[in-house]
Image (cartoon, rainbow, N blue to C red; front, side, top):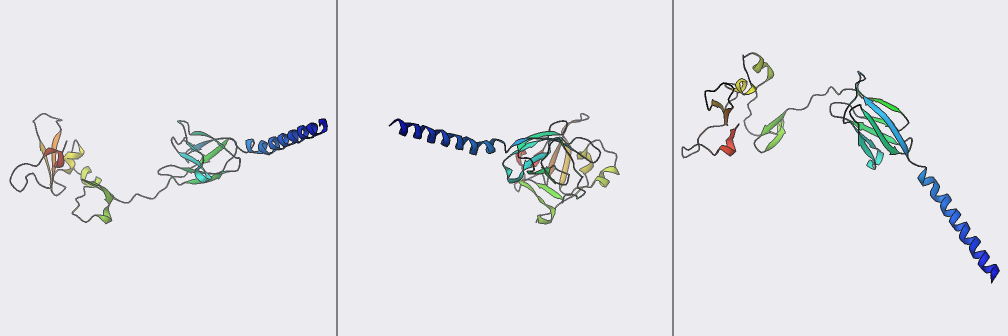
Length: 189
């Protein structure tokens, strides 16, 4: 009986030792990876996304462009930021990632009353006021620059006070029965 108890105790001890040895590598798999994300002029990029492959871990850079992430060394990291080309690097210790500006221009986006779409997808009339149009006139605000340049846009001063907010009406000021439209739908302040 005593021999049977000893055998089961040794078996139990070996089983526990085996389980501890199996679990040890799982604790050693991740490590703290730190780094800095900068632009071509060595200026920190604030708020860049740093995501490990598979998306299971990620962070953003702080005010100094620094980040830290708990991943396995050698894990692929994807670093992205608006206006810069995304960068893919292998995780290491004390990394410095240099991001290059992306020189692609954005497609023209048109803001409409119920959302925004690309200009090529708009099926209605669109008026455009360019920066060149604004620079050729002595104006105080962008609203004054649009006055007389965009078809269907009526800008009026509600009061004679200098600097007062103008009323902006788009595509007409009256409805079919001759009354002004409700201020919530077509009047911008």
